Image 1 (cartoon, rainbow, N blue to C red):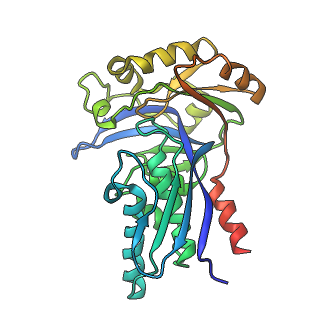
Image 2: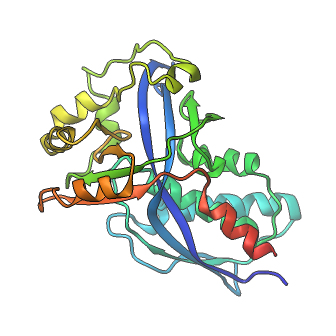
Length: 291
């Protein structure tokens, strides 16, 4: 029986276990190396097929007009690809989102939402696109979207689209939201951003050699609350900013250890704990629905 809805679809956050800027392309895009780690904390989306062909976001997302929403843009791109292949448009979709991830937090929230939307619509429309084909649709919309479709811990290169599976840590994280939104463009256009870090190998990462976030010094200079969160969390473990900021995280070997640190976080910050994931939970959800 064909699906007409998918509810409770997870869109997990990611952490950059390190992030190096190794160069810059002639078109202005920065060349990066990073390891993306999925964690079990994120947004949740519901999808319902419509009787017409419209893509409609039925919940409000403050600060994000519907036409600019990556979810809507991704679904319309997939809808156009479906029409190219089948000569007709598939049914429209109502999308409802329970937004938990902060904007400008470096957690990949918008990209994760878009990737979950592509996976859900691919199933609802029975479009039959492979992950690589969905990744090609998502990449022009956001460099992090291919990772979420890839769906496991990945060593990333290029602008973030060249992905290789790597073993990820089995741990718990404490994540602090410092209460500021960090615009990615402000970090990447900063004159003091270094863009010449020597590339490393997967073996270097697995050996944990000289890992850092090259964007952190710029972000902490421009946004003092980020610097304050890094300093506080560094008192309890190795702390690092994720992505271009603003969120800061530290890894712990057990949930109990993470919980103990979480209880000490100053009340002025939002903070939470999350478990590392080895696989995107949407993959399992779709397999269950296909049974």
